Amino acid sequence: MPRNPAHLHLAAALDGAGWHPAAWREPGARPADLFRAGYWADLAARAERGLLDLVTIEDSLGPQASPLTGPDDRTDQVRGRLDAVLTAARIAPLTRHLGLVPAAVVTHTEPFHLSKAVATLDHVSTGRAGVQVRVSLRPDEAGHFGRREVPRITSVEELESPAGQALFRELFGEAADAVEVVRRLWDSWEDDAVIRDVATGRFVDRGKLHYIDFAGDHFSVKGPSITPRPPQGQPIVAALAHSAEPFRLVGTSADLGFVTPHDTAQAAATVAAIRTEQERAGRGGETVHVFGDLVVFLDAEPGRAAERRARLDAALDAPYRSDALVFTGTPAELADVLQDFATAGLTGFRLRPAELPYDLDAITDGLVPELQRRGVFRTEYAADTLRGLLGLPRPASRYAAV
Image 1 (cartoon, rainbow, N blue to C red):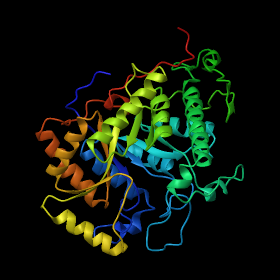
Image 2 (image 1 turned 180 degrees about the vertical axis):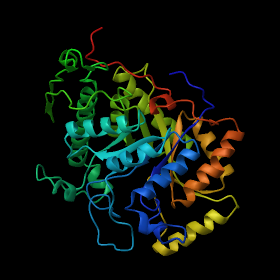
Image 3 (image 1 turned 90 degrees about the vertical axis):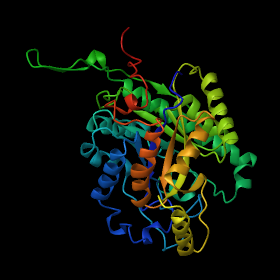
């Protein structure tokens, strides 16, 4: 997988008013706008101004909650979301280069529906779409559908028990099948299936639409899709990975993995685990990006970010904690951290702004110029598709005649 090790990819993870639960209470926050398209369009414009590769947009099938396995009764934190795929489709025509990667829960969602939604997003954005696949361990989300029961897991110990690990394997195995179905459906129309031949009265060449005939443990899907092949052929598939089963999903099924190491040794071990799964899946010659996730509190003036974090923690009445490393400091200090982490094999970083739009502006106006001065980040967009930005080739349809 040849790449310039000095070149970093950057993404921003967008969620509500920011990743700190008290961010909506800050003077510069815009809580009245969280459910308006203009808010998300503005955030995307800010990210594109900083030449970022992509933004992700969080989503779930239940309200945000402090515990990961179910809802809570808190009223002092942001609750409620717009649909991430629909939000991305709304803001896509307002951007030109930025990749748009909404999250989608695949545990209860039919892959046929997801495939046509993301294919539509790729058409609307002219080739800048992706999807971050997620699984759901929450019983309340399963209750929306009534198809299965998911036991409530309230601790790490329960998750690491034999029963918890069996559930984990089942859900991530289902996610891998969902990705396979989605990818086959994207390929089910050949690139030139739509011919629009007025003289002969043929709009499509039916011989270039293909049944996928997928039959697995979790899905049985005949196909073809109802949506013509996306401009990228295959939009980007991403996944967040913290442990062995998600590492396997990234290595076998994804183009991009988001990981949460807290030091370079952990980063190197995580990258190695994903590369091992990639080799086992016969994908050793393919580029699979691994981005490190960090929550960031950024200020140009030393000490200001720490003061802001302390103020937000006081409003939360507890220290903020995250699955990812929480960085507090200046753009130059963050640039040092990113370059250090890159030596462990990470190909880029997804930064989670603690407060929006404040920390997103600090990324685009502070961090990006610092990385450009160091010669490790682009100074202009050099591709029109997300695959192009990530250096990934456009694959041919697996069903096209050779």
